[in-house]
Each structure stands twice: as structure tokens, then as C-alpha cells.
Image 1 (cartoon, helix red, strand yellow):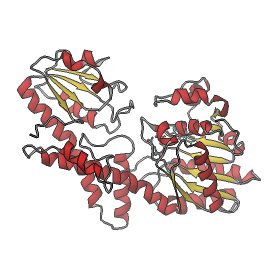
Image 2 (cartoon, helix red, strand yellow):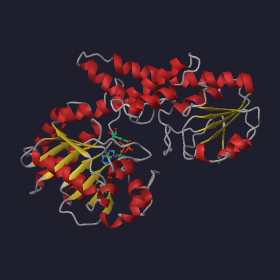
Image 3 (tube, protein in one colour):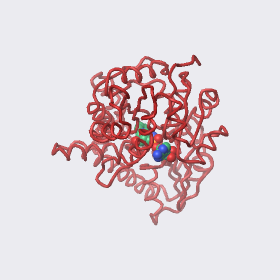
Image 4 (cartoon, protein in one colour):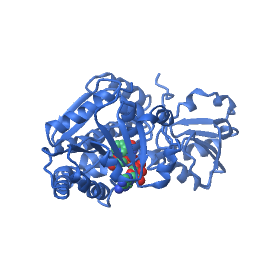
Length: 425
Ligand SMILES: NC(=O)c1ccc[n+]([C@@H]2O[C@H](COP(=O)([O-])OP(=O)(O)OC[C@H]3O[C@@H](n4cnc5c(N)ncnc54)[C@H](O)[C@@H]3O)[C@@H](O)[C@H]2O)c1
């Protein structure tokens, strides 16, 4: 695997996406320098310890250590490499737009360094940005500070990722799609080659201009959330209809290739650090051009209703079965410790406030958020003695271990992700 590649790559920003990207590029045979401003982060990485959990990351860091080094020094990172991937935060502003503040900070640091280089240097922006950012914000800034012409002496590409937390490495190495917005053909070719060298599959590679790539990134994520909300809206409807089951209907819908099976599944909706804010950014972008944002607003409205529906079901169950409640799942999705915008956490916090709840125990394999509940260290400890067990995050473990035989006959299980139990006959 470790064929030496002719280009060296720096990855600037070693967070949830950047560190995994650096490890995957090193796995593809590139010499990679990972750079981050956080000293503790880089120190841990130099000692071989990943600063956060992501499946397969620690193993990959171990197997790629010959190809991967870490630094806090942006000079070293840029001078010793030919291509810089920029993967720093683009936090949401109050109006939903992403801020380019951190990307611009990086560009202001690296453009003067590129000025001194004699060879062609490519800047590849991976962070999610607002449409128009590359052309209007980054390109003039880089040209001004480097004194070099983009597309001639240096290159600029926008190459957003479609990975999901909890499967970042697998998604990076086996993408459906690689999206490249490019300043010029040579720059696009360089990025395309990196993915051909690194991916384990043969992905579609879509190359276009900056604005198309920027809109595509947001549109793709918003389309996925539209499917999720469509399924959940159907589920709310089926709740009111005897013998109708939204899971069955969605499984059938997914068989049609015009729809496809992914994301068309009732559950608690979407959360996490990307989907909710990508929708807000897309709304903000549409409204800035006086376009129609009603579709995206409906997606968010339906998503916000899911915790409310779940809380109502749990409240009804408490009335019927009693107030000893066990909750399985806190993270916003399986495979991660993250609880950012987690529907599960929102539900737990609300039911913890209810007077009818006598005992509340919570278990999640990775997320350890504290609150007015007892955090358990196993499923078995959590469900023992409960009247109600609510599955709020669909971790595989909740479906493979034998905890159900610990429940009394008077207990009930509310599974908000696999609602196949409704009697259809
Ligand atoms: N995490 C995801 O699932 C995901 C998926 C697709 C796109 N993205 C996008 O990727 C970008 C980064 O996301 P993330 O989740 O990796 O963020 P993160 O907060 O986990 O990591 C960002 C890293 O950048 C570092 N950093 C900040 N300023 C820096 C600078 N000037 N120089 C060097 N390092 C700097 C931070 O210290 C941090 O380690 C965002 O735009 C996000 O929207 C993330």
C-alpha cells in the first residue's frame, strides 16, 4: 500500500474530520504533515494517542505512523508540502450562515509562505462554506497576500466531504462521490489523483466550478434530511391510522430506485454537528437571494416535532406502566460520543423534569452526559427493574444483547427506531 507518492500533503486542522483525513491520506501512501493550533492535541498525537474516539482511527494512526507527522508550526507544514488541505471550523452565525473567520486566518498565515515558494502549491478547502466563499472571499485574499495568480502559479480547490461521524474512515476511503470545485484543470487533476490513490473503491468524481460545488455540498445534505423528515411526517400520520405502519411503507418506498432505501426511515430525526446547521445555512442562502425556503423550513419543523412525539409516548407509557424509566442511548447517532443537537439528549432532559418519573437510568456505550439521572455502565444495569425501556439511539448493542429477558411481564419497550411492532393484520 505504501507506495511513495510524489506530492506531500499538509492537513491544517486536526479535528473530527481533519485528523481522520490526515490518517486516510497517509494510508493512501502520501507523506502527510498534520497541523493544529492546539498544543495538547498535537502532543497527544505525537505520543500515539488519538485525542478523541472515532471507529478505526487509533488502528489507522498506528499503521500509518511512518507516513504521518504532527506539528503546531504552520510554516513547517506548508514549506515541506505541495498541497494543503484546510479543515478548520466554520461556526454558524446567528443567521445560520457559516463564518469563514478561521479559514481566512489560516489563509492569511499560509499565503505569505506560498509567496516564497518556487513550486506550485495547491490550497484545498475542505471545511463546509457558504456558496460564493471561494470566488469572493478566498481567491482575492490568497492572490493579494501571495502575489501569485490562482490557476497559474498556485491552485485553489473546494473539496467538501460527505462523511458521517461514527464512520468517517470508512466513508472517506469508500465514498459514493468525490466533489471537486476547481480554479483550473491542473488543480482538479491533483485532487482527483489523491482520491484515486487513496480510496478503496471507485467513486464517482464530480468536477465543476466553485459555486456549483459549494451549492452541491449543502443541497446534498439538505436532500438527505428532507428524506428523513418525509419518513417522520409519514410516521406521524400513520400513528393516527389503525393498521398503518410507516416502517413497512418506507421499506417499500425504498425499493423504488427513484427513492432508494437510505434515509427514508422513521425514527427520532436528525441531529449532530452537520445536518441541522447545514439546513440553517441553506435557508439563509436561499433567503439572501429571496428564494423559497419553505421546503427546508418544513424539514426542520418536522424534525423538531420528533422529540415532542417521543416525549408524549413516554409520558403515556408512564401513566400506564409506572415511573421507573430506563433510557438506552444519548448520542445523536450510533458510533459516536457526540451529543451535539442530539434528539435523545433533549428527550432525556425533558422526561427527567417530569414529576411522574420516579427513577431514571441512562446507558450509552460512548456518550456519558451527566444530568438528573443515573448513568449506568451496561444495558443490563440500566434496564433492571424498569417499567419502561426507551431506545433513543439505535446502537447495534441494544439489538444483539439479551437484556429483554431481564424485564418483568409488566414492563414495556418503546423503540423509536425500529417501530415494526404495530399490528398490521
Ligand atoms: N465533523 C464532520 O462530520 C464534518 C463533516 C463534513 C464537513 N465538516 C466540516 O469540516 C470542518 C471542520 O469540522 P470538524 O468537525 O473537523 O471540526 P473540529 O472542531 O472537530 O476541528 C477543527 C480543528 O481545527 C483546529 N483549528 C482551528 N483554527 C486553526 C488554525 N488557525 N490552524 C490550525 N488548526 C486550527 C482546531 O483546533 C480543531 O482541532 C467544518 O467546516 C465542518 O462543517 C465536518
